[in-house]
Image 1 (tube, helix red, strand yellow):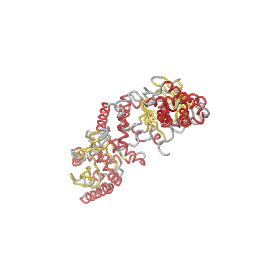
Image 2: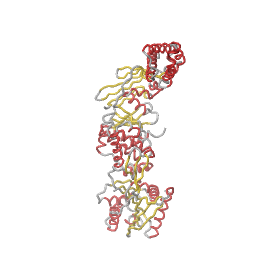
Image 3: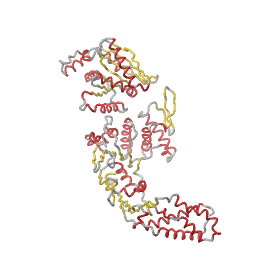
Image 4: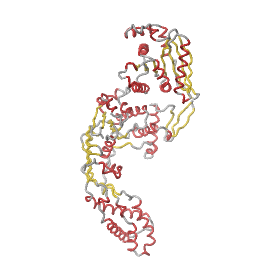
Length: 411
Length: 210
C-alpha cells in the first residue's frame, strides 16, 4: 500500500495539511508544530480504534473551536479513503449508551456467573434476575443528565460507515447495594442463600474491573483497523519476540548479528542474542547483558527487529523520532538502513525528527549513486511551521538544507 | 586501509596531495583556511571526519590542514585518541622549526605532554619512539598511546626540518601562490623526500589497535 495524497483538516493543532507523500517522508520542525499530530492523523485514518489511546482527551483531537475534523488519503492508485470525526449532541447518543451499557453489564454478570459451579441458574431463575437487573439499573440511571455522565460524543465516519464513540462515567452511578437487596427480596432467601455470596461478588465485578470508568468506546460497532499502516512503538526485541514463532526469532537474531558485524556497530563484537552480547578482548570472550547496552544501540536493534526481515513490505510504517538517544554514527547507519529497506521492500515511511544528523544523513557524502537516484524520486521533507507547512523534494531539501536545519535550532 | 594526515597549512596539504597523485589512493582533503565560513569549521570538520570514517566512504586517505601549528597541536592532542581508535593509520605532519636534535626533543616532549593533559582522566601515557626514519629534510616518529597501562593505539609523526617553506626554498614574501606551489611540487623530484614519504605513507609501516 502507498499513500499518494494526504489531506488533514482541523486535527489537533493542524489547521490544514495537504501533501503528496513519497516513499521516505521526513516530518521536521520545531516543538509544537504538529509533527506528531500528523503521524497520529495518518495512524487514525487507517486504524480508527487508535482513538482509544487518546483516552479522555479523545474529543480534543478535533481542533479547538471546530465541530469536525477530516483526514483523507488517496491510496493504491487513486482509491480514496477518509475518516471524519464529528462532535454530536449528548442526547443523540444517550439512549444507545444506556442500552449498550445495561446489556453489557448484565451480559458480564451472566458470563461471570457461568464460571461458578454453584451459580447454575435455571432458565427461569436467570430470566427473573435479568429482569430485576434491567429494571433496577434503568431506574438508577433514568434521571441522569447525559452531559453530566458522558464525555463529548463523536460520530466517526470511516469510508461512509458510521460509528459512535464516547467515554462516560456511567458505572459510577450504579448502586450495587440496591441491586443485591432487590435480588434478595425477590427470591425466597432459603433458595438462593447459598448462591447469594457468589452473586454478590459477581455483581461487584463489572463495576470494579473492566467496567471501571471511563466506560465506553465504540458503541455497538467497532471499525476495522488496517494491517498495512503500522506504528513502530515497542523497541524491546525481547517483548517483540514473544509474539513471534521460534524460527522467525532465530532468523531475526541471526540477521541482527550479521548486520552489527557488517556495519561495525560495535567494537570487538562476537555474537548477539536477546539476553547477552558476546565480545572478545585479547582473545578472551566475555558477555554483556542486553539490558546493559546503550539506549542508542537498543533503539537501533529494535528498529532492525521490526524492519530487517521485510515485515513491512509494501506497507506504511510510522516512526516517531527513531534517532532518539543515538550517536551520530548510528544515526547515519539508520539512514542507510531505512533507504535500503524502502528500496528493497517498497515500504513507505513517515518519520518525525528534529535531529540535524539524521536529516543531513540523507545528503551525506557517503550516499551511493543508486541511493541518491532513489531518493531523488522517493523522498520528501515536510517542514512543519506553526500555521503552515512546506514540502521539499530531495533536490529542494538539499538546496535548502541550511534553512531546514536552522529551523530546528532555537526555541 | 584508511589513513588520515593532519598538517599545519594548505601547502602541506598540497604537497601530500601531489605525492598521493602517483598512487592508487582515493583522496579527500579538508583545508581549514579555504572554508567559506570559517566560523563553522568545527561542524564541517566533524562532518568530514565522520563521513571519512564510515565503512561506506569511498576515500581511503584524508588530508587535513588546521590553519597553523597552534591549531594543529590543539586539534591533534584532543582528537588523537578518537582517531587512532577509528582510523587504521594516523599521521601528524608538523614543522620542527629547527633542524637539530633539540627541536625534535622539544616536539616529543610537547606532544606527549599535551596529549596526556587532555586525556588525564583515563590514565593516558604517550611514548614517542624514534626517529624510526630520518634524512636531511624529514624525520619520522612512532607514537604509542597507553590507557591505564594498556596499549591503546599508535600514530606517526613526520617532522619537517625546519619547515616546508625552507625545504622548498620558498620566499614567504616574494613568491606568489603559483610559484609556491611549483616549488613544493618540485620537492617530490627529490628522491630523499619522495622515498621517505613513500616508505612512511604507503609502505607497510602500519599502526594497528593493539
